[in-house]
Length: 499
Image (tube, rainbow, N blue to C red; front, top):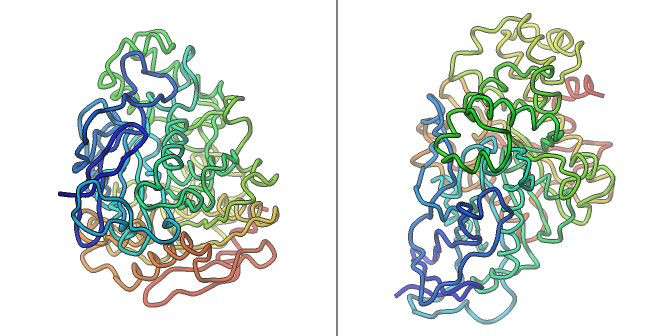
């Protein structure tokens, strides 16, 4: 018999392995379909008896990744409507006892809540690399969550509240606050962490001063995208026209999500490939993503980076960073990099809001790069490195305890280099299996040991193990193999081009 925990809505039974008990697919909100479609999250129906939580729950409606990304970042699709669920891994049960409770004696353990990435259109808490077993092994209660994606979670639909997916994330954090003590966690010691769209979610949540978490880790997502409502409506109107419906929540609710996703995909591809401010609006084009959080004047009242610079979230410890060559992930495996020229580079970067003189200045700094390599470098800085630096500087200047990292180990596969998402297996200390497409067959375990330990130490003690970031010195811990190094203002010559 495995451990059983009482939650706000009913009892759940998990499964134990090697000193860690996992509870998978726990509903934290009602299924967002039928009368709940395009509405704010609401509590799930309570259940009687004990609910077995031994398998991942349904994932939110989403497309599959196109080739070659389906192999690089596997994304399981689990059918079912009860997709607003989460997973908990805990070391806090002493044996295979039914109706067990956390071991007595002392306060609860620190908690880490993972928000997955996927451009606000893909991903789930069930992605294999996000298995939280090794965090629990090392003394942390780990939680991974699902939230609504794509049109369901982020489209501007008149007649429905905006930022439904962001509201799901907040609802899940409220569930953690109210329930995690039953799993051995301390609700006053919560670290929220995420990557890509998950990292953008973290910085957005940080800017809201919710009081639901006490430390935050933003991986490759400091540039929290906040669309102007009118720009977001341009995306909605285009999708509605292609679907042959009115651009309203009522009209979209009459369609099955499966009917919407192909059109959602097509529009998303056009926005990312040709980020045209004249067609999609400046805030949409700048991020190269069609569906993101929106400045709704209610939940999200100003751009997250502005709020953080003004002191929002200054009481939350922040660890923030990026990979050295983020954008190679999007250009190299597809062969797109080889097709680029400097002329095309200027057009695309201008659409994404890069100042007109910067491509030429980058060319002067990097004369031997191909156009594709230069594009990857510029957009890595535009979308990832510079926003991370600015968020760190704003948080530190407001008195927030701030640390910064760079992940520099280069994958040998597909000319990826130190690309987007490569650090995930290292953070979770989970280098085997599904992620070999990114890392290659022999990634350095010692690097995973160090990076995973830094994340654990930050959650446990509020210190990842190197000097804090300060705008005057810009100290950054660079993770690499065979050793890490704390560097003063890495890539400083390029950074200064953005001042």
